[in-house]
Image (cartoon, rainbow, N blue to C red):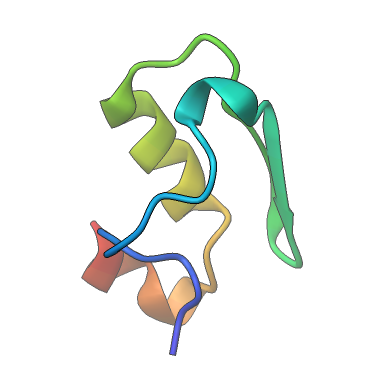
Length: 55
């Protein structure tokens, strides 16, 4: 099961507080991106088996 989720019940950090997310599949720079761009960046560093599902 992917730990990158399409939506969550609770927010623990504001999107403006997170500049980088690192996984075993890459690094996503989120600084200054729109919500759509953030979603695409996070999908790109998700496990390949879950990328289609997250898309």
